[in-house]
Length: 344
Ligand code: SF4
Image (cartoon, rainbow, N blue to C red; front, side):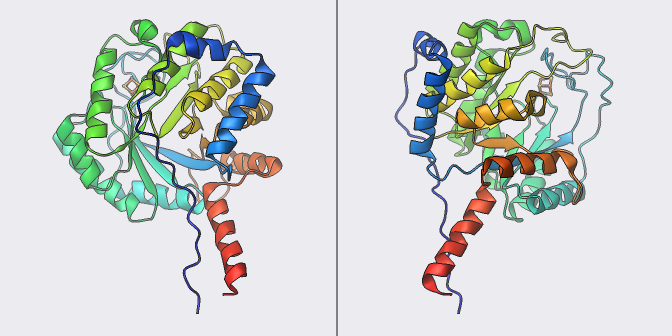
């Protein structure tokens, strides 16, 4: 008889004690010599993630384009001419098929993103059905739908949502250069509603938008001082899209991106720090430095096919070259070790 031998991976709960990082203290971390910074980040990483597993999260756009907001980096804003057509909410069956493909490709989290300023009541009902269906496949669920009310956050939680993504984007001082159609406090309010509903928080930002190092430190300080800090911290490297106001911005030095990852790891020790937009453009060598700096989650296989997904294959190749296991692989390996020990 086979007994239940699966050894669950350590589930990380972020500490509930509030942190108090000043922008100066975070900026001091950025200034540490590169090798010393990576060494320190790697120590924090190993202490908190001894198994070193990488999370694969797949993102599906469930409603693309036509957004009324003016985020200067975003090709989905209706006011910029980026060639993205506004679409309707995708049917439930399409979401389920994408989630099944994601799971088959090794993802453990499935994120559904809609280009809305905020969802309406009927939108929430449709997303609730999607969340329930994805959850029933055994995947962690995440949604990013814009600003939420308290009630909407509770509705999503009740349908089985695990995480809500709402990024702070940048430091408060730089925010007005990037977005004018809503204020920083709106974002903090939504994050408060999400926490009060008992959802886990996925919240990060974008670097390379022309901000200063001090402003990057300001973003990290804001994230680290959220009470508690987010369970997931996506760090995006700006992808400059033709037609958006940020096209032509001075590109960020890739090593500064690596530093940002390291500082996020040190200040938010138990968070999943995720390499998000702009990851593939960084190339294998810089991504490898990011893993060394403490990144332990990637957005993966976003053009989903059940077979022959070259981007997902390239990601798996890189992880294999580095000897990094995914959460699913690590869980399976732990299970086999247990089986061997119990002789079942
Ligand atoms: S709210 Fe989201 S979809 Fe809309 S413009 Fe901003 S980033 Fe793009």
